[in-house]
Image (cartoon, one colour):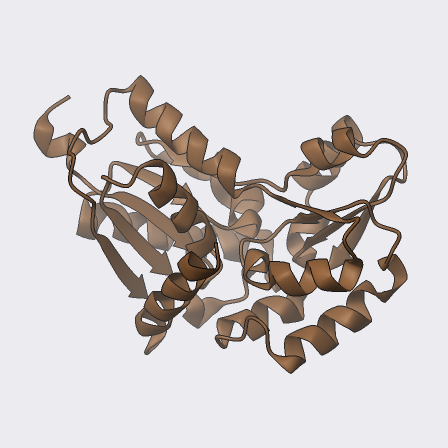
Length: 261
């Protein structure tokens, strides 16, 4: 593989700011790579749209990442876009397109006979892909689906531990307090509220996030094609967003998330 190609950035995109949590994992794993993070905040949230709408939005972003930035791979850092569009996009493009899925399998396997809460957007939870994952990996009735669309909206406003976040989560999670053995963060926005979620559910509830596995898969696919950047210098991150001032918010939230990790 030519050095020019290897030096190309990795594209990372989300319906808004949530994918920054996946970007952070990618930087941990491959700090010498360059990244372009695109947040489609003007069209957020994806999780209340139709599957076709999400596909069209995702395709537009992928086209921009390829045409404008010549990315060598695309990380769909959005559970909703992964479930609604990833398979179709992979058939249409030749570069690696990696998605993210809720960490249902480890949550179910590590908590046999105990309740697991799966928090995600309504669209993610109703997709066949998610329900098949639950059927294959969990015991009947073990996983409780909890749609949390308002949490996405609050985080898109830059709120990660505000009183509004706590009030919303306390009402949403009240039936599972002290009962859930694990909670699956099935939306990349939700790790921003990880502390609040864990405080509300209680110390017995382990948090499961699919970002670590997704980042590892990006590295695996690039390595298999000999496309990893061998530079010893830290890479650069370019933040772009479809909403006015969205890129500035991305920079601020990313820095905040890195500090909290």
